[in-house]
Structure formats: structure tokens, C-alpha cells
Length: 219
Image (tube, rainbow, N blue to C red):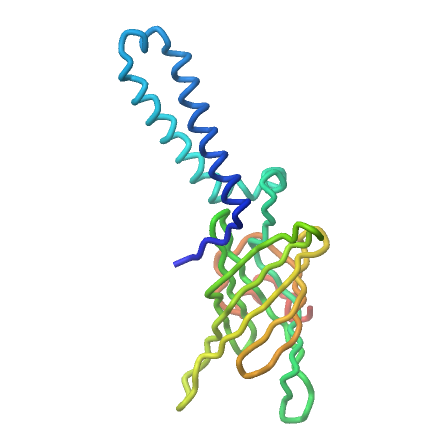
């Protein structure tokens, strides 16, 4: 089940748009059938339902894909992060030889206007977000992607699923994600990712991403 990730302002804009589309459709029907309505006022209820149905259909199309059009996203003040992002993860976790971790990582972000999910992929581990928030600071106009995640791990006796959280900022015209993360190991580190594609289908592992985008292993 996906969580709603709208802020109060974004939800207000969406509901306002829905209300105006419903009312506009109803008003057009009333004006076009004014003489008929004078003879049968009950038809107005039917036209009202037509307006709500039309607005519901448009809302479905909008929330699924139309809102991703750049000019629509700017109008609704909703950043688009849907797509495949690739970059580097740097961690304070120490390997046996004492060197810190610096590895390639891929984020597969699936986003509609209402929902958001993040799948992180490395050569050895996968993570899935359980809570996400995409918010804009009204003072600085910076957009942040914050999330809580659970790590998938091979079963080992006495082992457990790792978990953690991240806070990333959108930069460079919403093409770069940069920030920090923490896990309950406990470890922490930094992430820097660049959007490489807006198409997320067919990518469920790091190897899938590497086959589709060979350059990410060297990013």
C-alpha cells in the first residue's frame, strides 16, 4: 500500500481544481440545456452527477501522468522525482582492511501526484521505503525528499532486517539528489544521485539497471 505524500497546500490545490472542474462542467451543461431545465428541474441533479463524474475521470488522468508535464508540475508546485537515479553512496562503515565504503547505488522512484515509493539498489543489497515525504521549504524554496526505509538482507541465523532514514535535497533543476542517510547498524553516510531516465519499468535489481544503463557502475 502506498502512502499519500501531499502537503496540505498541495492537497488544497488539488481539491480546489476538482471542485472548479465539477462546477464548470455542471454550468456548461445547464447553459446548453437551459430550456429543457425550465421544464424539468430534476435534470439538474443528473447534470451535477455528470460534472462530478467528468471531474473524477480528469482527476485520475491528472494524478497518474498528466501532472508530470513540466508546465503542469510548475503550476501545481509539485516536483517530479519519478524515474531512475544513479550515483554514489559513501558510508562511514569500515571494511576489514579499514577503508570506508564508496559504492554505486541506484534509486528507482515511482511517483504519482498522490503517492511516492523508493527502491534503492546496490550490488549487494536492496532497500524499500516505508514512509516518504516530498516537501518544499517556503523560506528557501528548497525541495527535500525524506524517507524511512527497510533493507532486504539474505537470511542468516539471528539476523534482522536493517532500517534507516534519508534526507535528500533536489538540486540543479531537479536533476540531482544530494543528502545524507542513517541506518540502525549504526552507520551513516552521504548520497549523490543524478536522474538517468524517467522510465522505471523492468528494473528490480542493480543488475537490471546496469544492463539498461551500463555507465552507472562507473558513476
